Length: 151
Image (cartoon, rainbow, N blue to C red; front, top):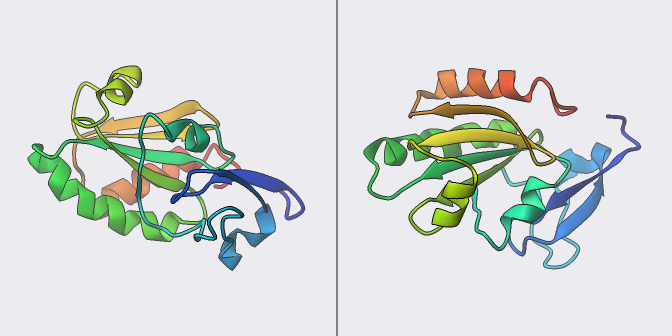
């Protein structure tokens, strides 16, 4: 992707689509509607109501499908948040609570928790199941993002 290209990404707060210059991803762009920072390096909650905006955006979306009762999910949530920060300008990080969003769990074929999947413009690029240490997750994510313009 060239510096003159624009991309569309969803706001992690109001979930509205925003068009920004690719070259300005590292300059802390804000949402045109609510003025929240678009690139934060923190996971945000995905629901039936907002997932489409993020799924169809031009930036890869990493989703952690989890549940509150799942011990490995609780352990992995810290790893997920930690690894999200260095990838902030390469991918968005969303979380789906499968207890609160069973429709999404069913729609995306989630059968094991935690499940982590990477999507680009609505297409699934990679999926893994189970908690993993930070280094392994970081390596897995690098490989998953290699096929996108954000590699």
